Amino acid sequence: MILPRKPDSTIANAITQANAYLAKHDLVYGHGTASSEDDAAWLILEAAGLSPLEQPDYGLVLADSVVDKAETFLRMRAEQRLPAAYIVGRMWFAGLEFKADSRALIPRSPLAEFLTEDALGLIDTAEVSTVLDLCTGGGCIAIACAYAFPGARVDAVDLSSDALALAEENVKMHDLEDRIQLIQGDLFDSVAARYDLIISNPPYVDAQAISDMGHEFSHEPMMGLAAGNDGLDLAHKIISGSARYLQPGGALVCEVGDSAAALCANYPDLPFQWLDFSMGGDGVFLLYRQDLADAGYDK
Image 1 (cartoon, rainbow, N blue to C red):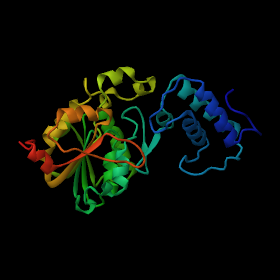
Image 2: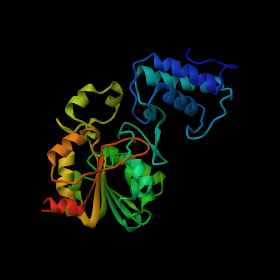
Image 3: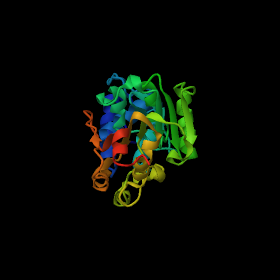
Image 4: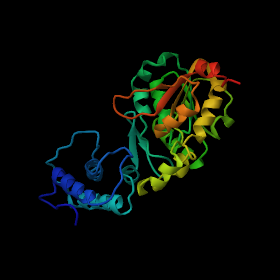
């Protein structure tokens, strides 16, 4: 038995005991939570049918059936080392709810802030009418773009048919089928249009980091993480190809995470603007089409 039973099974007590249980295991965080306490609270509230986004009544006594369900969640987290989002089947990104499962990476990009804070003032959101989301995964960035740029059409590309199947479910959940087109393909190979914004959270984890990853990451599709020895296999293709698919005045926004230093070393001629996020996260750059053209990447 992990958790207390009635009358001691208040939400507060359950979270305390769940935290103590998870803290005994060698778990890795970073899939939308940062600690055992975060996961404990999330899993307890989900078992109780409560939203983790709302302030609960911590004195509420949980039924034994809820405690049983919570213990199942906690064992899955500790013994199978499943990320909490995969256990409960949902995640939030840019303030929006999404279905989450092993067909695609769990949404956790700092790009959420770019898409909820008027593009951080770097582009005129009112002027964005076409968006290309490369490596869309489960579709969270494409869908957040549709909300951030209300008049825009969004094309969302991914190589994985499994990821696109999940993205389709998420697009339908947000009733955005008329504004988001899902495309299976390898980056630019399946598109012909020009866009005001190209945005991407591609695979960018280098080989050493892949080998050092905790077991939790093995539940995610490796093709969404690994990007060669220096983590830049896809970033190279995105940089070399974007100018040909951007409208004049358009911009490329791309996340490369810890591979940022390697990227700068590879492109000393490009004036990367590294986005500053107040809510944490880094490794996201912006380049305007003219920056790419001036460096000869529009050929």
